[in-house]
Length: 259
Length: 258
Image (tube, rainbow over all chains, first blue to last red; front, side):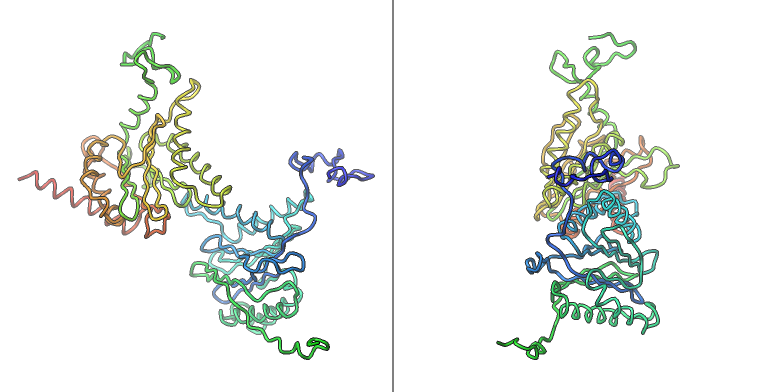
């Protein structure tokens, strides 16, 4: 396998040439080791928006195996601590691996009881470093993460993808959500004059509307989802599964649908 | 057997490293390690009806120390508590190993480590340090507590590595008095919430006011109420327990006056 992978006419950092020494660890050049080439079981969009007193994030509970809707009850939202939640789209094995690492870090911090816990900003920073480091070894964790929570008394929302691209915003979406829904979320924010004018109810209904759009238009989306709400003054809560009502009666208008 | 220059002690000649037996078949270094435990503040563990309580008489040698800076009750993962008597740095090392074991187990098995398994690992660790001349035994004894599947559990591990499962146990300077007090309790009927107060009372009653003026009461609880989580008792609950203990002490003292 590794010879097929490294068959190449000139030396690049990833394939065992002299230039590769500095970039690789022995862990990478182990002949049995392979690199992530493609995501296998995947999660679709994650959506999130800040509101006047916190942040809300939603993600459906589907694990797709290509075009097969194989696992219909996969939790993609992780509660890290009272002030932090994170959700991922992309390869679910990579997500579960990273989530275990994050959870273990969180337990370590709880044990030491020095009052220091993962804040959403520190988790976002750590995830960025991990994702970028993996991409730099051409062996990415094939995920896009959204981190949400309360940072220094303010709502926090951050994005990190498999390339290590990271940024913070008032509303975020991954995958198809970034194409179909980000505009809708931005409109909701603009209508309220910024997140400080957005109520929890409006934010929740905006996210629900976006999930519905995704269910209608994204072939890998699903109508069962989890919702995470991190109010600034209260502990984070992950609820679910919630069920999305949808109206497919328009299907009858599609030619040949009933034949 | 080498001549010892200054001290004449019971084990002279066979006590210089732990890999040496005495002619009577004793390991004096291990026995001396026990003495380190016995000269330290008492640690008490009580299995109640719906939880386990740990309490330590944390003797503080200077008023200059900040309160609670050196607790003798440790979290091992979320669901296991450890109380220690003896040399605190040694106890911290044991806690570190225990935490690594528990974290590793949780990562591999996808579930919290059962206490019986952890106790076995801690025992193996402490025992290993009694077999080689390059190391010394741990100068601490530990009490491990958890509330698993509705059952309270308590294990005690000693410097030799020996360990047992207990309904209630005490180690440290006043262990005999404390054990006697524990035996008087009706553990099967005692709720964990009351157990916290009773443990505090035992610590206060066994505390030697003359020799060790100042001590801090370290208390912890793992019970149905805490949903199996090991929680260090602070705030109101701690004050309540501490006041209950002090009041019981005054009552007892006033009985003496008669």
